[in-house]
Length: 622
Image (cartoon, rainbow, N blue to C red; front, side, top):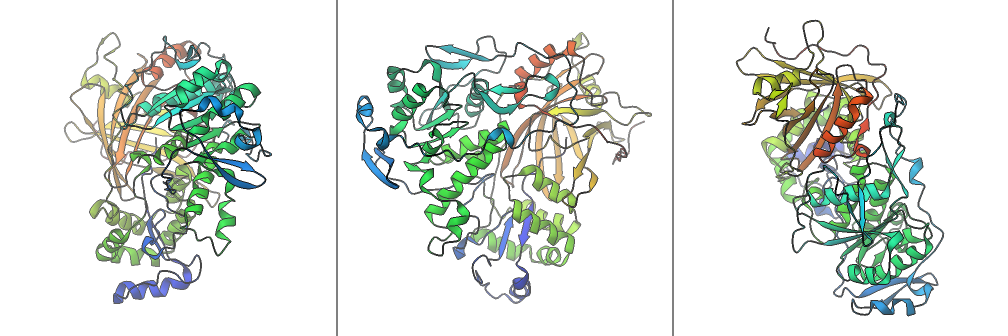
């Protein structure tokens, strides 16, 4: 498993301003904020923009995918409707929902030609190395009681905590059996997960956040006016999944959710996708971000452009067709009503951060700007930003340099110019195994599981088969090397993995983790520094075969000063091939105990893996 890319430093200076920037830093002159449109000097972590200049080239982004703060209306009873090409407002309260059907269709239910691209043609997972074998069945995890969808009573998933009071309430209406864009690993030959499965897992993910958000799920096939009246009166956000095939249910959902100010539609048709809105401001009333930026009277920091970027970001996240980006899209909607820590970390320097950079990091900044590799790295990172973590990590590994690492170390670890303080996720509560090979698990045996079948003749402990975090587990050829060091009680982890660079080359990269025991056998702490950002993780041995033919490891961690927290898991074998089909039921049960369904697992391509540098980075105990 490659280390998570938390936030790495990106300093981008326009070529025509490079000399002025050098003069500004050396001579102490105040920088000019902009030279023409788009000529801002950006000093940031991944995307750093001089907020004080008012020239936020990328809008008001915050956190991993940004946070957008549209204007708030004083009343929550305004509804925007589409009529004759203009946005109109209608007074409506939560106490007269029974009168909704007395409104004309054109006043309450916009139905223009859908413009949402087909999600099934985008963001497909890596399948060229898949091997289809006996399919695994019996993974249904959806139950329905009175039209309310909930996790199956037979599920082994960790228990859901009670939603915290005072948090935004989410109402999800789902076509339970419709196909979602979330794929099972190709080896399982199960195709795509249903929207019912995806919605139930998203309900868990939202409940497991530090804020403890609650989501009620209604099945479109069991909708009634009474059921909708009961749930829409209490909801702050609505979400539609896979609606449109059932026209009656779609009409009911569209009408009764008009009193809910914020919501989005994913995988919908018949105009439902155009109901996406924030604070009663519909997405279809805004042109694309590029068109807005091309109009001189609509500056990029305007409220309209912030909303346009929000809607564009949510659509982009959905088209990536993986569970993590869909989860973050929902968090962005929640963030419009209440700040969400998972998407609220600072990703750019404000006035204080800029002063911190200039005061403390002038030397590494100048050296980076003068180094072609470092400057190339930060220029490419500015184009990508934080939304595509895999590509951003590939950029850093493609253009590694000491100058880049020193600048990142100065901004993040030494001075914390962004003033972030991320904490690792505590939920779900995943317990390590208690017994192995028929005996109680000891600290020594737990180390043996990590080390796997590594020996003098075989330097590899494990090879990743599939992983839960799509941001980091899609790299091909991920070799895991665990070994005991010469120092007493020392344990090291050196992952080696392949990166496809932006220049079209394939290069091998590696990282270095220090591993320590906790007070529980099978639970470890991992610490490492990657490109100037230090992360601390907790790893758990969820399960392992007695003959070490496979193992499941779960991790949760945070890059504190980068403001990012994450969780994930991996299924690994000694050679990267899938375990025997007879082992899959046990593996499925172990993944469920970690809160992970199969449709969240990303299959890794383990073809063409010759030439990996498998020499340990530390002296090994003989």
